[in-house]
Image (cartoon, rainbow, N blue to C red; front, side):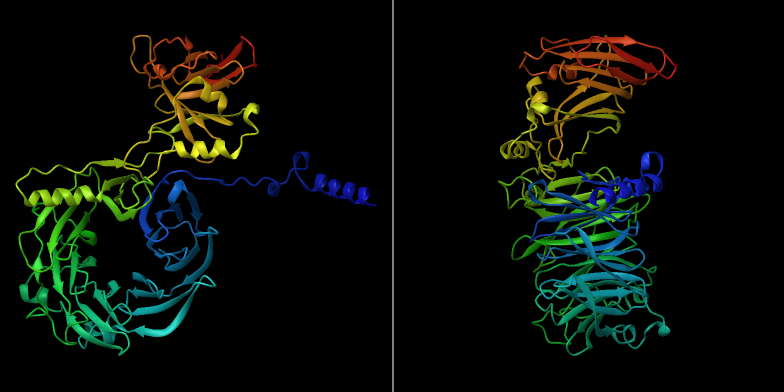
Length: 579
C-alpha cells in the first residue's frame, strides 16, 4: 500500500511539472549569505549595548554588522528607502521608517520583520526614548504622536496621547496650517518629563509631558526681526549633557546655539535674556557655498567642553567639520575640516566592532555618497583639536575604508571547487580560519594568509574569481566569510599590467593548473608546483618563479569558454569568433 501511494505521488509530480517533472516551486534560489556593505547604502544606526551597526539601502535592505564579523541581511517586503532608523538599545529590536510612512519592527536575533505599523500622515521626525521605549513621531501637520514598543510581542502599541500643533506651536499657529516637525527629542536629565519639539521654520517648544503644556518657546521671531531670508531647520542635536543648549542647522548653511531652560532652572525662565535670539552663531569659515547642514552630533569630551560634528551636503557641495564647544564660555572655537573626498550621507560612533583588543576604541563611521564607508579613530580627532589649541603642530588623523568583499573591481566570472581531502574538517579548522579573517570595521589591515600553494589544497572549498580589471583572486570559501588567499595581477611580456577583463576560468585541483582567458583574446596557463611551499606572491608582479610556470597564447577575439579534462595535458578554448 505504501509503495502504491509513493508511485501515485511520483506520477502526479511527473504530469504536473514541466520537463522532467520539475516545477517552478521546486527551484527556489535565495540569498544564503551577504558579505560586506551592500550597494546603495544610505542610512546608519548603531546599538551601543549590543554593538550592532545597521546599514540601510535605498531598496529596502538593511545590513547588520556585529562583533566577531557576524553579519546578516534583512529584506523589507517593500523595496523602498528608509528615512529614519533607530535601535531599541540592548533589546535586539530595530525600528525603521520607510518613505511610505510605515514603521517596521525588526527582530535582529531571528532576522525577521515582526510588525509593520502604517502611519496615516507623513513622518518628519522620529525618536526612541531608551529604557522606557516610548516612541515619538512628528508629522507634516506639526503634531507629535506617541507609541509604546511592546518588547514581548515585538510590536507597536498606539497610545492615547498626542501633542497637537495648535497647543505646542502657540496661539499664532500659522493660521491653522501645520508646520513640519523637524526634530523631537527628550531633554537630557528629564527624559520622561520634557520633550523638545523643533519645527521646520525654527520655532522650538519645550513640552511638559505630565502637565501637557508648553513651558518654553523660542525662535519665533528671529527671522522677521533680522530681516533675513527664510531659513528651514534641517538638523539639530543637544549640545550639552544637562540639556541647556541645543545646536540647530539650517538649509542656509548656518548653525546656531540656542539656550533651553534645563530641569534645574525655573519652569518659565531661560538663561538667555531674549529667548528669540540665539546664544551664538557658529562660524564654519566658508563663504562661497551655503551648504545645508543635514546632520549634527555632539560628543562630550570632559566636564567643560564637547565636540560638535557637522555634516553639510547638497547636490553641488559638501563639508564635514568638527568643532570644540566650551560649555561655560563662548571662547574661540577650535575647528577641524575632515578631508573627505565626497559628500557624507550619515555618521555613527562605533565602539567594539574592530580590534577585540581595543574594546574602548571609538571609531567615527562615515557613510559616503558612493556607498563607501570611511573610518576615523575618534581619539585622533580629539588629539588634533587639542594640539590646535597649543603651539605644537597638529597631525591630521588617519582614515581607512571598509574593504569591499571581492576587491576593488567587479567580478566578471567565478568558479567554485570542493576538495575531498578536507571534507572532514573539524571545528578547530574553522576557528583558525576565523581568527585570520580581517575585521570589517578595523582601522588596520590584517595580513592575509601566507600565500603558498599548500593553502590551496588545505581549503575545504576554493573559490576563484576573475575581475573586470584583469585580476584573479583565490579565496578560502570554507565558511560564509570568504578569506582571500592570494591575488594574481597578470602582466604582458614587457611587464606592463594587463587590465583586460577576465572572461573565462578553469582550475584543476589535482594537477594545480589554472587556465584563464580575457577580453583581449589572451589565454594564460599557470601550472603551480605541488612540492613548493615558497610564497607565490611573485605572481603579483607577473614574474616567472621557482614554484610555478606560466605560458600564454594569443587568439583572435575575446575568450568565451575554457575546458580541461583532469590530469590531462589537453584543454579546449572557445572565442567569440567561433574558434
